[in-house]
Amino acid sequence: MDRNVCAPKKGCFVWRMTKRVVKLGVVLTILAIPTVFFGLPIAAKTEWGRAKVERALERVAGGPVHVEKVEFSWKTGLTLTNVRADAVRRDGVETSGTVREIVVAPRLKTLFCKTTKANVTLRRPNVAIMTYADSAAPAAANPPAVLGRCCAKKPLSVESLRIEDGSITYDGDAMTEPLIVSDLKLNGAVRAKNGEVDFEIRSLTAKVNGGDAAMSGAVSVVSRKTKGRIEATIEGVVVTDTIVRGLERLVPALHVMPQGYVTGRVSGSLALEGACGELTGRGELTLDGKVSGSRMMQAVADVTQDSRVAGLEFQKVLIRARLDAGVISHTNTELRSEKGAARLTGTVARDGAIEMILVCDHDLVHEFAGKAEAHLIEGLRFTGTAASPQPVME
Image (cartoon, rainbow, N blue to C red):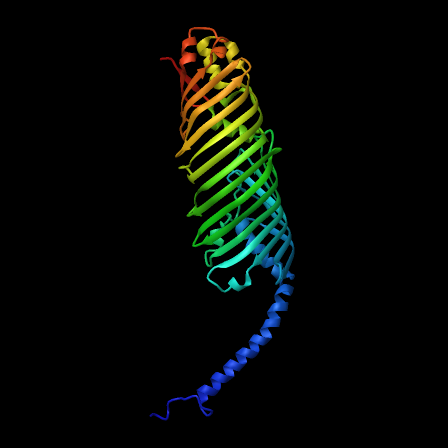
């Protein structure tokens, strides 16, 4: 046996050095434990620690973020108090917000694992969204980064994402009334890996313009493409400009002339699934209020040569529709007035083109005059768009 081969004996230089390195490592580890245990909470409170947190948040928000106080404890995790994101405008949309408190509680045993796990709570977040007709306004210096981009180097799993007492205000220089979401509560989860973000909505409740709203589902974002499934219910939501625009897109008969109006409250349910632009689903909504000055009813007035039809006021609209790859199909949408009811069937294409049939009941037809009475009972066909419906006399 070769005597030069190093063996684990007292006189071996390599063996002595190995023991010294191990001893030194043990000593450094023992010294480092209290340093990290007490030093990390202290470092979090320093200006340096606060600046590091603000820079991390700015990468997500796309603009300046200010944090009043940063605290860290091994029991509760990282706590940020009074967080404010300055207004950032991109493509004519300005966003800003505040959060009373953000608590990030990582699971310490996962910090050195393949996937970091944490629980996140946002208390009293308030987001303001403002739209401007002038989309040529200066854009943000740093476009917001999605969660998957921020976590591209290491997968992240937020197993409990909670929002408490949140609010959203959506307004614009072309809107007469804002859309207000208040008392928002969310229980969900977020998982990010390799640029893919999965967002699970276990439960979401909120007040929307004085009404109640609830939602559940899941959304995935992959390479800036969004897909998922959502189920939502609303009850007694007050109609504003934003909601009217959505209703006009959904039901062409609700597209009114400048002197017309759509008021009231909306209730119902929606279920959607698929990718953006290829969504499928169904919905049943009820509008209790007043609708007058419909462009479609104006077209009926032109056919019947009875101007009273254009000013007909509907008190209730029952919307029954399906969505298939971006095409809205009305199975039996009903508009009710004191004088009678009208029913809509047909489709609304992605580009807004309509193929609709309007059928009036006998009570409503009796209010009309002119040669089109039979057409209104059997069905008057419309093409064109909601903004310019064209009756087809066959």
